[in-house]
Amino acid sequence: MKFVSTRNDVPAATLSGAIAAGLAPDGGLYVPERLPGPRKLQPGASLAATTAALLAPFFEGDALAPELAAICAEALDFPVPLKPLATPGDHVLELFHGPTAAFKDVGARFLAAALARIRRGADAPLTILVATSGDTGAAVAAAFHGQPGLRVVVLYPDGRVSPRQAHQLGCFGGNVVALRVAGSFDDCQALVKRALNDARLQAQVPLSSANSISLGRLLPQMSYYAHAALGHHAASGRVLDVVIPTGNLGNALAAILARALGVPLGRIVLATNANRVLPEYFAGGDYAPRASVATLANAMDVGAPSNFERLRWLYAGDDAALRAAFTAQAVDDAAIRAAIRQRWERHGEVFCPHTATAVRVLETLRAQGAGGDWAVAATAHPAKFESVVEPLLGQPVPVPPALAELLARPAHAEPMPPDYAALRAHLLGPGAD
Ligand SMILES: *Cc1c(COP(=O)(O)O)cnc(C)c1O
Image 1: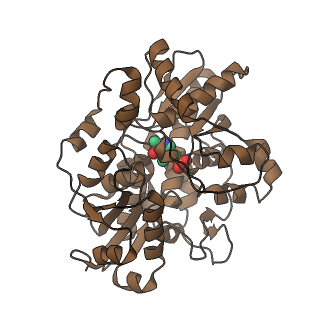
Image 2: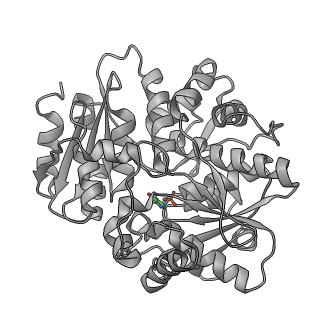
């Protein structure tokens, strides 16, 4: 399988080439040149085995193909259970049992396992540069920590991630450098983009990104939808409908691709926070990217969803067909708070603010008469967002063991002004040679 750019201006790349590059050279996103036909998948197989079977056509002909099973086994070594909720027919797909307690562990661990193999034998270490508003940086830092031939430099907006997120970013050390930038997430992202486009810098320090546009993160995110939907279908004979908390559309796009490959998923509904670009588009408006607004579900504070370009490609630019295929609903902060508080009071269920957007959307769908079996994708453990969740519950949320272990380590982040010369100095400084 070869991969082309959504902007069609560059030659097709191999899977390894596309994963190593991150963004295509014309600024587009890599997509498979065609979608493989429906896959024959066995229910009851492990998450890793299901994923290897699902991804095999994408790896065909690539140098990584013989390593696919090993990459899946290494990256997908934690459970992603589908659990029933108190309300009949409703479920939660828990994606937060990895090292940093968010679903981004899946993509980050797969990307790290793939890149470590792609870079085997390379002369210079590869620096993975990430701008993060919280979860991405922690997942990438955890996944790449200790990987030979790879280094991570994480930029985050100082004071604008939760204290536990900041701790997670700074607690690795070794080949992971955390930079706390005196600026916004957009400042961090602009600095990273500039460095990735700086040919002179790249000649000295090979750089790559690990943003949600990376194919190495997108493809493995199909894994949990496949595993859960196959299991559910085998047990009940019914497809699984899903509501997905959405920011850059990486998680939702993986579900859409999985369904296209024959995974027994039904409806796919997108839940956003008060950043309404997608709900407005799916309701018939223009696609109008804009600056993001800050919400309680901060990992979804996205005003220009980066994977939208891939979604449009999938529908060959046919907006009417795309709008007919999905719905998206926005949930504001007051409704996020209400969902967290009410589910706790009525059912003893605890959700993070991101997951709560999807819970609220599912409640709305049920109130409108939606039938079927639904799963809410739980994208982070509520203990990661304790400053939002605990006051609403009126009690502490127990911290899962993997997260507790990270929080017990000392943490350090270097302060940095939001300017490019400072970033260059960090990249070229000690350890960069
Ligand atoms: C990143 C993130 C999201 C949004 O995922 P996308 O793939 O960007 O749509 C939702 N919830 C949490 C907890 C996240 O970290």
